[in-house]
Structures are given as structure tokens and as C-alpha cells.
Amino acid sequence: MEIREIDSELITQTVAEMCISANCYIDTKIKAALERESVREKSEVGRGILKNLLKNAEIAADKQIPICQDTGMAVFFIEIGKDVHINGKNLTDAVNDGVRKGYTEGYLRKSVVREPLMRENTGDNTPAVIYTEQVDGDKIKITYAPKGFGSENKSALKMLNPSDGVEGVIDFVTETVRKAGANPCPPMVVGVGIGGTMDKAAYLAKKALVRDIDKPNSVEYYAQLEKTLLDRINMLGIGPQGMGGTTTALAVNIEVFATHIAGLPVAVNINCHATRHASCVI
Image (tube, rainbow, N blue to C red; front, side, top):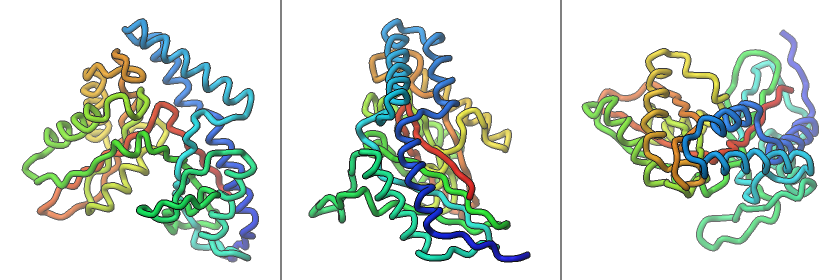
């Protein structure tokens, strides 16, 4: 098969547009879930909050302003076809140029500091966090997720023993959400990564958050575990914005990977009610 040439400028422009769009327009699946729960929520206060969240999303879309003032650290999952060659700048530079352009032109808050202790703001929301995977084909799929830290700060990782089993996983995930309380702006979406190594589990948990919330895990066992966890979490009573109620989470998404015979790594990555993300294929 012939190698397909893609100009880095196309990647930069695509990323810039995604940065603006994902921050201003709520995902249709998320919107549908909020509408559904605004009727089913048993708390009157909770129902009112869910309607306010929908109104906020409507205003953001109409005025093309961010859904939330925290427009996040830019996280990318990029699948690169093995028959693609990028002309011009390398992929990392092209993506960071797009983040710089999108966050500046879209008047999005720049929240990134150059390094974690002296904390000088980079002024353009770069560098982005970029994960790449080579796949078959001649296309590039870019998935962008602006990750606000009100939710990111409530994420957790635990190296369970294999003997802890599924109940250990359920207890850890549920307890992590309980400790998070109102801070992640519930109703939240909960990403769970199980398996691999410490770092792989964390990656899986974050990647789980960009899967559509109406698409269960492809393995029935884990699809059922997602339902079990969602039920347990919604029994916590945290409710919309932590004001009490039956809608603490909209979904639990689980991703898994092979692991060592002596280990059971589990990571929990939490997103706010907006769970902003967008995908594009070039």
C-alpha cells in the first residue's frame, strides 16, 4: 500500500478546532444522560441542579463560551496508521501548536505550569499530554480530552492483591468516589483501569473516560461489573453537585489489560458531569 502524506498543519488546525469545540459543546450522549436523570432523580434539589447543568450547557453552546472555567490540561489519545507519513513538523510539535492556537483563539483558560514545584505558567496551555498507538491503515485518529483538576485530583490508584478479587475492586472504586464527594462536580463519569502495571492501569482509567457512556465494555463480565459499580456509587447519596440524591454518577467505564500473576493494579480516574472529549479522523 502507498504511504499517505499528511501535512502537520492539518493536524495543528484540527487540534485547535477540537480544543474550542470540546470545551464549548457538551457531548450528545452526556446531554441525553443528564436529561434522563433530571426526570429520574428522586431529590427535588437534585432535579433542579441537573436542569441547571443542562441550561449551562445550552448557554455555552449558544454563546460559544466554555462549559466550565477550568478548560483543563489537554490530553490526547492518537492512533497513527502505519501507512501514514507526516510532513512538516513532528506529531508532538504539531499537536502542541494546535493546543496553543486553540486555547488562544478560543479564549480558553491557560492552566498549565512549566514544572510542578516552581509553577510558572506556560501561558498557552502547553505542553499537552499525548499518548500514541500505531495501528493499521493510512489515517490518524485524534481523541482530545480537556482534563480539569477538580476531578483529576480525586483520582486514585491501588495495587490490590489478586486474592482481593472483584469485591476488592468494587470496594476500592466505591470508596474512591465516596472520598471524592462533591469535589468532582457530580454527577460524574468514573473511569476504571484494571490490570497491566501501575502506570498502565492509570492510563486505562483515563482512556476509559473517552468511551461513549452508552457503550458498555465489550466483555459481558466487565459490562456487568460496570452496572454493579454504577449502582453501588449511586447508593452513596452524594447526588448532583454533592447536594444529595440518587444521581452521583452517570456511568462507570472499565478498561482492562493483562497483568502479572502476583498483581491486581486498579486505577480510578474521575470526570465531572461534562466529561468533555472529541474525536476526529484525518
